[in-house]
Length: 222
Ligand SMILES: [Zn+2]
Image 1 (cartoon, protein in one colour):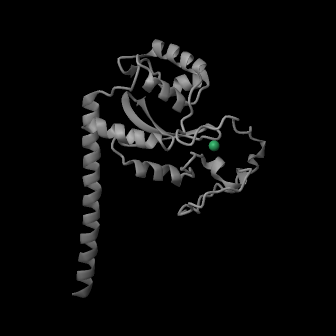
Image 2: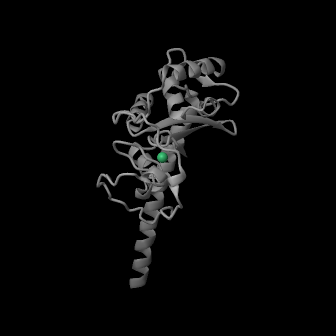
Image 3: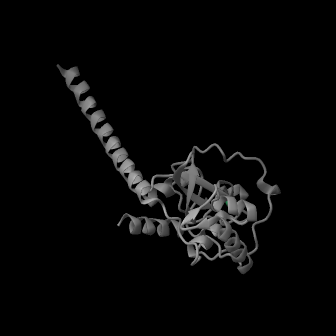
């Protein structure tokens, strides 16, 4: 159940150029969502609970300056100053006008965007055959039974081969001999419980605040 739901969420986020990544931190598997810029291929990762809703994930990235839509753009590629053309789709419900990064100096010295623009439907670009071969060779060495070994990850492969991590993840997910990272079911269950309790905790906190507010008001009237 939870598995297919998280698959749906992953698919939904992938259409926005956000992929899933698991990392081992202090011996614990941790879920990250990685946004990859379709223009400059830079990435940003944020840590989320397994069941964190996709729209909330997207909101968090938006808050740090990313834009989503036909293309997924990082903060620097999103700022109008960095754009050659002023063709900005007018989706500006921007509550994040306070971002202090607009005053960044001269992005002009940056390398031009890669010539091949990815198709709008799939922000994670399609790997070349040569890249697939290199990634699969590497995966054969460090990935088996749904797990990376010895501290390897999509990220380490991406760095080693100088290929965007989203592309590495895509190749791994689609590779018949490798496929999705299999989480320890016990860990997944525990993570879900933690998330559920956290949600309850937040809810209880709100109720407590409300009750306190009412109490203070009442006390003021007597
Ligand atoms: Zn960018």
